[in-house]
Image 1 (cartoon, rainbow, N blue to C red):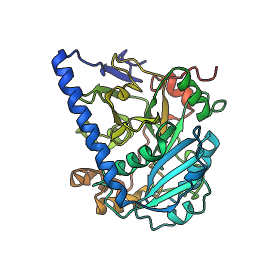
Image 2 (tube, one colour):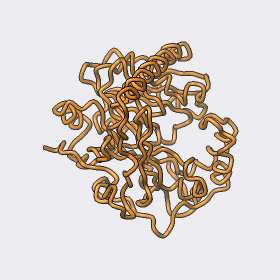
Image 3 (spheres, helix red, strand yellow):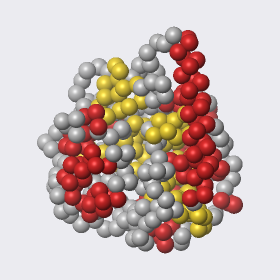
Length: 361
C-alpha cells in the first residue's frame, strides 16, 4: 500500500505538503493567481491559431459530459477511442487537429458528435497543446464535467462495468468534488514493440497486456502544490541512469470545469493549487482515483518516434531526449520477468496504485 515501503504501490512520504509561514503562503498564493491569469490570457490569444472545421456544439446540454483532445496522426487509435468513450457516457468530443496527414481529420469530420478545430501552429509553443485546450475548456466546458485525455489514453476505474462517467459525475456532485485524479499506467507487449501486426481501429489492449507494478514514487512541489509521480516502464528502460527526467505519471483528467481554471503542465497539474490534491492529497493520502491506460507502445511507435524526433515538438529540450527516440526507432522490448499481466483496475487497487470510490452505491 502507499507509503508502507513495499515494492508495489506508490511511496508517498515526499507527497506531504510542508508547513509554511503565513507570509510565504500569502506570497505564493499571489504569485499563483497571477500565473493563472497569464495562462488564461495565453489561452485566449491562442484562439487565433484555431480554425473551426466542424461545429457540433449546438447539441451540448448543461448535463453533457465533454471530452477534449489534441491529435496528430491518430487514425489507428481513434475508431476504438471514440467507441470506448461513447460507451462510457461521453456526449460530445472536442478535437484540435495539429496537422494530421494520415486521414485522422477526414475520420473526425464524419462523426456527428465531434467538433473539430485545425491548427498548423507549433504544439510546443502552445505549451504542448494546453493553450488550445484551456481556451476550448473555458468557452465550452464551464459548468460541465470535462474529460481531457490524449488519444493514447483510456480511462479505467473500479466498477466501470457497472458505472459509467455519469455515475462518477453523480458521485462527485454528491461530495462536492471538483476533480478526479489518477495514474497513467504504461502498457507494453511481450516481444519487440514493432514486431507484431495491429489491426487499425481495434482494441489496443489486445496487444498491450503488461505493465510495471513496482517503483513508483510521489513528490509534492511548491509553489503549485502539484504532485509529481514517476516510475513505470519508460523510467525503467529509458531513464534508469537519470530517473529525474522520466515522465510524470499522475494526471487530473476529469474536472467540473470553471472559467477560472487552467491546466499548467499537460493534465499533470492545474490552477488553482487546491486542484492538485485530486490523486494524492496534501497529507499523502490517496484519494478515490482512476487509471489512464497508456497505449503508446503499439507497433507504429517505431515509425512515429523517428518522425517525432525530427519534429522536436514533444519536449522542451528535444535534443536531450535523442537517446530515448533512438532506442524506440531501433525497436526494443519493454517486457521483463517482473512484468505484470494487466487484469483490470481492481488489480491496480490491490497494488496500491489507485483507490476505488464508492460510486457504485
